[in-house]
Image 1: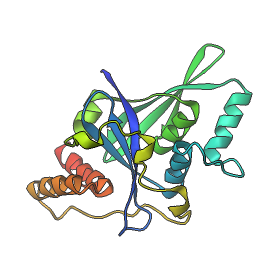
Image 2: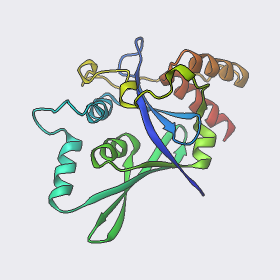
Image 3: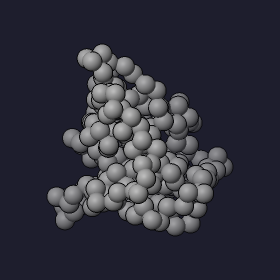
Image 4: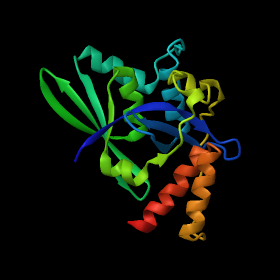
Length: 205
C-alpha cells in the first residue's frame, strides 16, 4: 500500500459543543483534508507546538517525552496513521536508536504532537485517505498562506477539563448524511464533518 504525506492545516474548535476539537490534516500533493476529532489536552499540545514563540513554563507531557528521547539518543523518524476502525484512527511512531528501528503504537493525537516536536513527517495509507478524506475546493486567494497561520485557535482558549462529546447521526439516512457532510464542509465545520464521515464509514464498511 502506498503512503501519502500529510501536513497540518490547523485546529478547528466547536462554538456549540464544549470540548470538541478537530485536527485538520492536508494531503500534501492533493486537495483532500483528513479531519480527526481529538481531546482538549492534545489539541492544546499540538497548538503550542505549532506556535513556535509559545514556551510553557514547565514541560508538557509531549515535551517531557521529547526531552527524555533526546537524552537517550532516540529519534522519531516518522508517524504513520495506519488503520481506521469505526471512526477511530490508529497510528505508529517509527523510532530509531543506534540505527535500530522500533515501531511504537500510539494514539494519533499523541503521535502528531510528537511528530511536530521532532520535525518528523506524517503519513497515512492511500486507502485510509480514500475512505476518510474530504474534498474541498481550493480558494485561489488563500493559496500561499502559511500552514501555521491557519490554526483556528490559541492555546489559551482550551479548557483542561473538557472532554470530546459525541453527536448521534444514527437516525439519518445515508443520503441525508451525505447532504449534511457537504453542508458541514462548505461551512468549514470540520469537527461535525469528521463525525458525519465516521458514521458514513461505519455503515459502508
